[in-house]
Figure 1 (cartoon, one colour):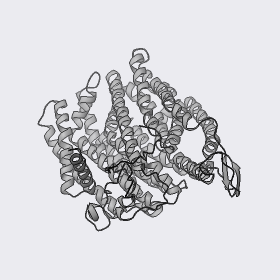
Figure 2 (spheres, helix red, strand yellow):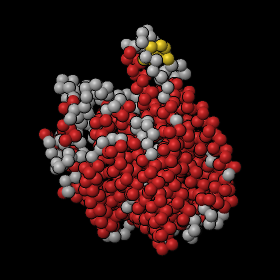
Figure 3 (cartoon, helix red, strand yellow):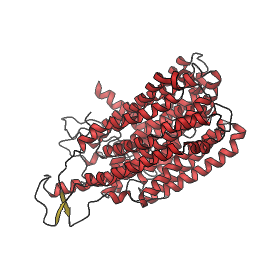
Figure 4 (cartoon, one colour):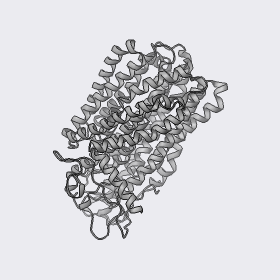
Length: 607
């Protein structure tokens, strides 16, 4: 798949597209159809049953987009291919992440050593959320999208030729994209280097704050100093990822965690007998360097050393760096830090429990959140589309895109939730029960994982809903308020439940807190940024949640009938999706109806 293609080729016969297609069927030209047509949107109109409207479409299809949207005709097909490529790399990274966790579990089990490493791993986890997954992306994708929009305006005004004659109403100015990079990247690197150095020096204090009850703080301090380099490397990785995604190049950013996990696995296998758990911490540093190298060639191709100069229309400032000012930066940072602080609260509380509690929480969370990670790849791919639509004032297009994203992401994460509910013990046994990780660890981790599953939809919605809030590049404090409220709920519930329920109480508090945040974001998005139909979205997700509960219960009952964990899990991977989709069909879930209709059409056309 090309990194930057737009898929505008026409074919003699029309084809159905992925649900990622943005354009309504009525908006397509009748003669030269692009490669993809839109499938029916996944949410019904207010008061309409699923599948209502001409040809089974819904109210979202009824309103064609403006003809001057400026969007490439084959964008839906391109997004589908980008999502498919991203999915493959995401799954590969998740598999390698499991291999990484298996290696750590095999050599260190659920012990003081693994607890010390996981305390140190809090640093890259926080850095990844702030600098790669959320913070940097929420800041820079809108900024780069606006810069690219201004570059396109300048090229159009000069007849599509970068070296054309300057417009009479303006004066020559620099390329907005390169101007943004020059104004932000050097300063960012200086700040990140200072942050990494400060963290290395303050590692003993950090460990005391994060885990005051840790048995071996010196080991955690050593690991923290090794992982502190990620403050710099993750920041550069996140900057590169945001720039590439704004340019609609999705494969290199999706591959960074593949490189990251390879670095950790390699160092752990090679040096665990010499350095102990410090080898895994060194692997974090090595893997973070590989993340930068994975994206660098593509970035240099898209941002060459020399770019043309464009026209400033009516002396309008082309600078996009102000989009990264304190008024925009502060709400994003506060939101991301509050979100990642959920993990800090968990580990703080777990450090007061018997050894291994932090490890049980970590293994359960990593596995349980895999469906959430897969579901959010949809929003990651389409976030630049939403940002471009907001930058050009196309609020209706942004609404349609966000509603479809929420529906698709909700379906994926709830299907995964059903599998986790039904087969948590079998999943943990197959993945981790070997070496120092024994049967008791499997039982404790599986119990926590099932509790975590209750909050998976909340985690997914927080990730999906936060992106539209920051897509316009304007300062907005509501996500930080919602996340802060959820964090307070997590802390209160955690203190109330930890000493009664142990690690299960901590997981319960996490689920309650993140679900509170998701509800607040869903209620606030439509009135503040993108006018989504919150009631219709909630109703749609409610149907899917009902299907997930039925499918999870069926899997839980069937899992006891097959004693072998591998065979039981294999049967569950067939049973749970079948029950999920049949129940969704019975509940007339529009997502399930649309997906099954698409599969049926594909199968019929193939015959």
